[in-house]
Image (cartoon, rainbow, N blue to C red):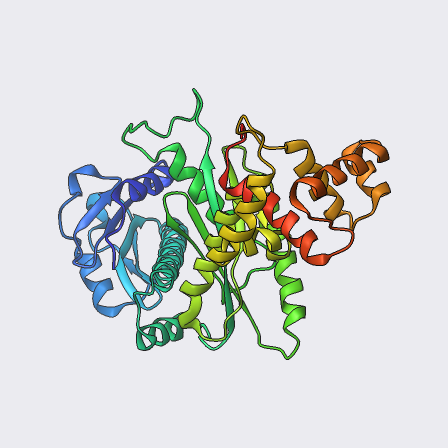
Length: 403
């Protein structure tokens, strides 16, 4: 039980102190901690001793009415969720003391209940956040997971995946993340606002975890009920990710890259899902893709290139790049770009011309030049088309722009 806030109690008393009454508020030991009669503060109230003993609201005829001119004393315990926080004592006429006493009692009990709710809610969020970080770190046992999740009314048997948001904070004259002025900094407020916005997303529920994993990484551990057709869940996941991306886009103080990992039925694989999402972001950035949300199907060739067998890279990809390198060390960039666009257009000259704004004759000329240099003809062989595509991807991922 926390002690009552004296400043708040004095504010309540000041609101009613102009009435013809004297107001005391005591702690559980019957000590007056706030009063309209400042000289009584710190003393013991005999009425409060009685009220704390009987634990019910009572109106008593004032035994010393001749001295303080008040005919009645009203006392009431402050009880919230079965816990005693002190008493309210009002000296006044019978009608005034009861009326003022009940209003003060209701005001104080309401704010205590609200404060308790906020503290409980914060405790729940802190426990959820700690659970999420431990799952991502792989630093928690299955027994501890079950214990914490059961306390939070969560089901550890659901499908789960990680949605990762990697943020890059913007800095300007108004928002300087390096300032430390003794209050919650702008960067912390931004994180809190982002967590609140993500937590309020219409697609998230009480089985999901939203937390800041590190300084610039926000994470949503999303849960799903298992179904036979997993493709339906992945379609839902794409929709959820789009919604989360919209929320992140509404913040002007940072840019972001986002990806999600695979769904796993075993909660111990949350870390694995996180690593997959992190890997997608790494591949997307390395491949110079400008999307905010990286999806596996949009990084198919880029992912293949990142994990390609070293012999394929050395004997095929690097050999092709060598053949497409001029004597001055620069690449035939026009040929490579044209050939990739041709492959992406399913070897359709007309569609390639629309994408590249090149004349058909220019495209044909560059494709012939490609053949003369490398022996690759994508229109005749899928393998050749694959080599051309992976060569272009490898160049983006590993070579500088001026080569």
